[in-house]
Length: 208
Image: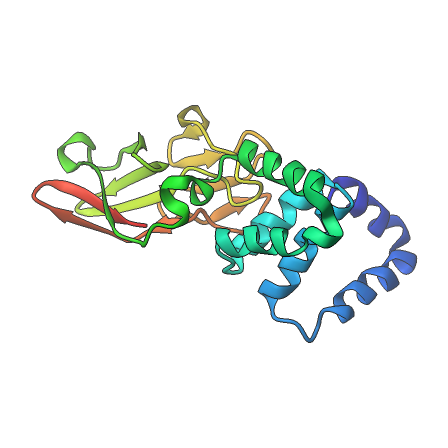
């Protein structure tokens, strides 16, 4: 929720609590993905940018694929109209979510070359631009962690300058992450998206 809604719930939870209970109860027979897609459509219909971003990222976390989200928008064409679908697509493109890129949206997951293992020291963190996305790589001995550089909150692409030691801080809303585990340690509750890794012929590969 926004700071404004958090404030109103704090000071008038007795009134707003009924409203939020109603919203929760209306979707209790739907699976999370279906609820998220309906919420995405309602936010596009009302052209609420913050809400659209919130439920778009929630839908991805709950397992919706980018093509499922695109299809939901297109199926709602009779209610939304082309102008609102284009409005939502413009925001989606501005968010620069790797999974929606033409290179990935139809691609099957595969092992992708990230870097030479010799190029990262033990205990170091590197931000690497691959062909399809930007990632943070952390090395601990012969163990490698690879994380998507986008914050799980509103998919802000976190720069290398946001790294302080082993703590990564998203500049937009100050979510903090422990780069050793990817866990969110302050402000938020969702971890960084991580990828399986392996080393072959001195190269670090990641699966996406």
